[in-house]
Length: 77
Image 1 (cartoon, rainbow, N blue to C red):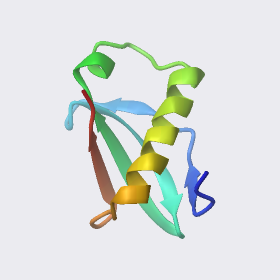
Image 2 (image 1 turned 180 degrees about the horizontal axis):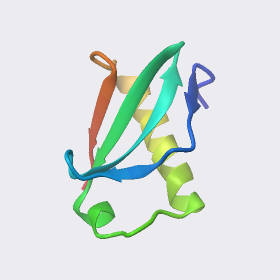
Image 3 (image 1 turned 120 degrees about the horizontal axis):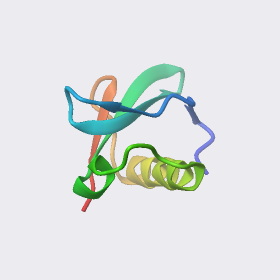
Image 4 (image 1 turned 90 degrees about the vertical axis):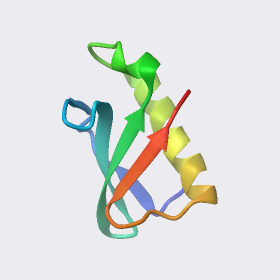
């Protein structure tokens, strides 16, 4: 688990981005994380189990990538 990231409990569907998103603090910087997924878009709400899975996906993404600015876009299949 990446201790430098703290996830906020504000998971919502962003109609403008057409993606689920939440915010986090990454090394003291506020970032917004968007999950672009056809499967997730069909959901009206996301349960805690799926939310924890999304947090893990972000942690794995950060192991291989660096965010550009204050937005992270994760494309999911």
